[in-house]
Image (cartoon, rainbow, N blue to C red; front, side):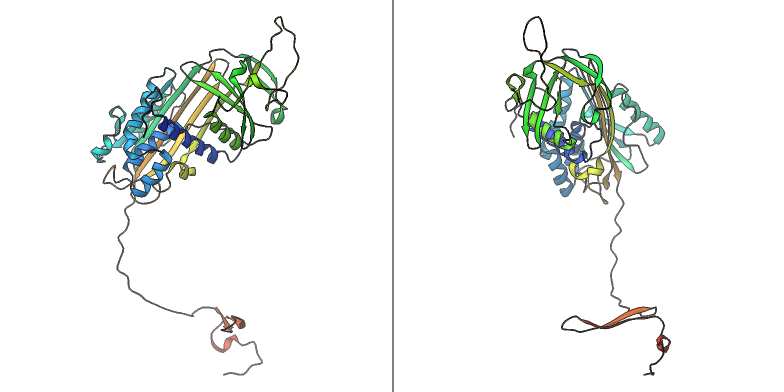
Length: 407
């Protein structure tokens, strides 16, 4: 594996692996055009920790979702934490809590950053309050509860809490205006500013053209807006848009090169100004979103199908048979005139697996009983033709409808 760094503790391969998970989740999540928000990177390092302790099949599935080998988990998890620590606008906390009675293998603990380790007391109310307080503290109270709630069978809990805070380098102005298309009947909370054509692109994608706009924020955080043709569904725009960001600006057509054939959502009019120079204006809407995701509903995206099934699947974590019981994410996001803020908390609970009952010795017994009403059929053997069929309602001669003689 190449060790080319992103400058924040993660290799390029690790970033690509995390982005692939986000893209897969996008495709699975957007079966409808309902509003949503989600964080793939919030889930990704937890999958790595689970994969390192899973059985063979679990490691295969989780490893495919994580996108890197089990021997890379430790450095990668630390790299994620380092990436967030290096940026003022980002924060990430990770936590791994276990019941005091649960014995954890030392080799697995070695890949878990020491600062993330905690112990559950066994007092459900006290532990839940502590976990919820941890969430509030690490999301600036934007989220106030742990997505996975404790239960008597939970032995281990893994969680991440991240925040994103960026202020626009150039503020947006608030106003109002009418929408178009599906929003044609709505009055919108508009945000606007003058834009640089170099920060606007037309991207041709498999699903059609996309208009991509860059809003630069503080702390090395940017936000891209993606717009497809009217009526194009959310899954298509997001999947193609996320893929297109990898090739910007090299393969996008910058706003400086747009001709008469304008991208989706772009119009051209004539105005008067003092300089006679062209103007470019960006308009968008303020929004405030929240979402709750049950990751087990799309378990195959995250490699959780096998490890969430019955039986013990984490021999590399503990001798106690364990399986994934819950996997959830809560997310909030706000896009305003000043900037963009978001918080996401992801948690995976690992529960004690039910012990499999040992097989008993087996002996064959065959009993054929026609002691209730039953049907019959006479069938031609060669052709399979049914010759006679009937229903026996009562035993013996009581079935006769009259006219026949006894045998």
